[in-house]
Image (cartoon, rainbow over all chains, first blue to last red; front, side, top):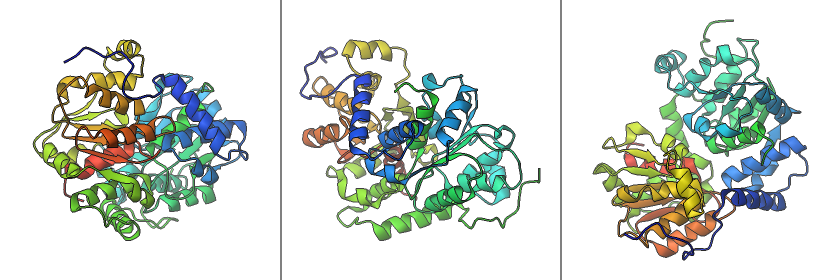
Length: 216
Length: 216
């Protein structure tokens, strides 16, 4: 085997991570219609688009008034991040967090399978039940399970605790669009979402990463 | 605070995980044009669609001949899975793996930052360099970085080792489409990819999960 190669290679491409980000964001801003967003919202929408490769989602992104700014400030004040899946938690760029914020995913806790059976719902919903004591002022990030978002909305009937921001981005064909519509209708706390079937863990993590730091 | 609630709730939705999967896959099969795929390919395409909520990607999925079947057999024979990001690794459903296959992400290894500097590329590309000794017969899953896929293609100029299958699904605006076109052109090993900007960690993990088990 030959040693680690020096360039040039057969392929021409940009190798530097910072340059890739810069050009990606420039392409997104050139192609996407972001005119209706505030400055805070725009930076979140850009990273959500970056995560999925689709500028056309800009039209379906919904921010409640001031949600992006509220989330940024809460993160600066040390709010924990409650994630519905390990993929979301893994996607958070720790170096961008302003306050060494805790990134929490309760899906693996031992009580979750039993609680899911008791609730008659998914493990994702049961994991949300375990957020109760940490919900007040937290940032919630749901990138996977519609049942997690529905369960969160149900939880608000039982507790006065409210997160600083709900990033509600479950993806898929059964319940995803409906759970996000329910979030928009109920608006129990500041929220960021995307109408329709699209969403996902990478997009939820990208929204968090945008709000965690003003550095692009 | 009231105790854990019994249904009914204000929201009507399907609570059972198995039923959600079943209905999701039925919707995908009703809406997507999957007619050109073999049985093996179809199950992979369905899960890729499931991961992103978009039936229209079916048209852009590319399998090299027999790649899906080759990957399934390699997994049954114990092939390790080499992932370009922790999100891909996290998205693999361990319970579906037929042979307690190793799921490996080298991105966090201590040598990666120094190697990235030496290569003049990203940490993702450097992490791929560390796959060399494990590449032969492995399943490769790239769901994040175009530079990882380009670096993998460059690696084949220096080693005769070939993976059993390359799941090449980097996402984004700079290099993603180009790296996947380069994979299709070079075809250094059996591969699965998606033309264009779309892709991602969830989609890469979904393809792996489809090939890991025949259980839907």
